[in-house]
Length: 254
Image (cartoon, rainbow, N blue to C red; front, top):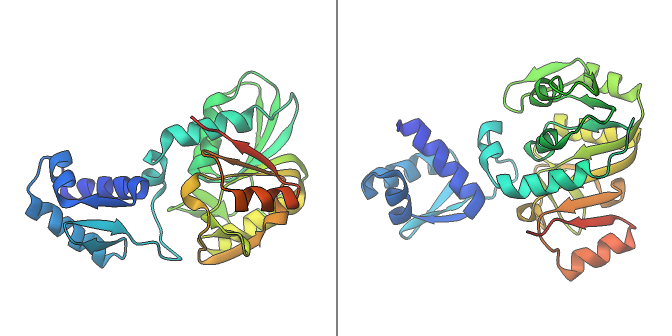
């Protein structure tokens, strides 16, 4: 395995586990502990992790950026459980929006022959949906962002504003009890704000690692969503707040 490939894999493991040791990474990749320490040093320079005694911890910065390829490999089973629950909400001839997130992308694996209309700014979703004969695909224009594999910009927003949806399925970088929903940058937040205004029901799909954290860009308060789907049971503070805001909760527990 090339050095760059191993370091990308280390990122995947850290995103899932948050903490790793030098010894377990050396065993996992079949390399020396010195090699892993050099990997940790390089990833520390990127601002991705912080070295600890005998290991490393994920550095939870406000604006940490990770490629879609890495995100797709992290918590795959949890994302699939949430995706199945989201697709289960759909009825024939529903019209809905899917954002660019890897969590929402997993919905593509569970579409049936039901007639549906999908709008998305995600290139991977576009490519997948074309394989489903019963789905009508609508795609906005805009500027293509390589890292997120999606289209953003003024043209994207203008196109979205001309439409209405039964559902919008979105994810986010994090959410907290104080403000609400956060994204990693302004262009993603703008699309989410726009689509929230255009949809009758907004479904936020987030795994348990995103709770009670803030991120770089404030997107909207929790009152902007109607349904929250997650992969684990939420604690009492979150349960009470969601009930107060009349947000339906779907806990996709294994």
